[in-house]
Image: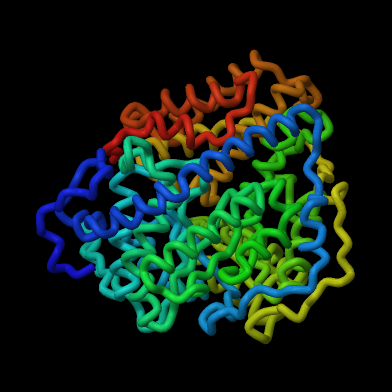
Length: 542
């Protein structure tokens, strides 16, 4: 994407393609006719299968709602029993001990690539609000990052940002199959969001990345079945074929962040075995999915979010199984996100937050993980130090965890704990404030000394729904809608006091509150809060 094209007028899109988002001159660098034709081909080829797989999700959820429970698939027992491995990894993916994630805004991209992390996962999904500007600007920023031309002068300070000589390896997370890009229509229908994100990045950057000694690398979110992984594999094969890129060049790590996926880890790796870069413990979405998939099961009501930790119940079991599965297949098992952020002005609280990160990363490296995630550049060194001390080699693929035996009951085990009024109120404040920021175009929000994204907001509203639906006891008293209404009003006043009248009155708090309440009190469980929120998202969010 040369700078020379930045001021050229936008050419007409290919036949059958229409763009409904606002245009800016620099968008012509990304939204070229050839790139749009490439994305349109992917949409025409694979959109019907996306719709079929989403329909299958709904059918399966109905089965869970009727009392069925996720289990290992009998039809794929031979895959789990087979002696096979994924294709060898490229040199720059052998050591992934620290990974940082965040949105694709220009400053974040530069800082994350410079952070000292092994990998930066640029996120078009949970850390991103999908305004048209965010999606296209993100593509521009990543294209410049691949070419190492990305710079920024902060308008408020005049500070200049540019890439260091050594940077993290870039991965890109496209949106999940359930999301669409409403601003690009192909034959009158929206393009699946994941195909839009993947297609534009791959078209513009695959060859450039290869020429610079790396490759087109991706993280794949929210999958619920190995058939969804198979679809991604078919997308990769077609994309590489269309651009003349050697098959197997793409490498992708699957986030195991839905409950059904935990029962199909071998199958995910098998479907993507020519393109696999392992699996990741997507812990926050996994907790959310556990609630969603067992929404009507009174035996699955969880305690406060803060008590649902990785060393307990279904989370501890899935960590062990993921490490064993990946290492048996010769590929990386990545740990989960540390959501803590540095706390300025309170050394004691900052030390406590850092100690929580150290303890979490020590648990992961001792369990056999090959690397881990953090959400803030200030935590990279903390995580790296732990892995450096306990993982002298580039990874732990030789730690086979043959001592691990995980069955269905282990993956469904509810951790013990309590449900408290403080936990309820925290869920309300986090959920409302995150949705409000998302509606203003910000998908990655620091709240109460944690970096919140869509996954953690999903937990907040899902727990409220679950506790209401099952009339769970909260601090010893059954929880009902009247109590919820009182709590919401009280916490809205607290939010107003925390953010100030000007910020509160100038924001989108009423819409955020109404959506949080609607999702929390609905008779049925809404699959994702980002679906109705996308309907509220202004085309030109600020």
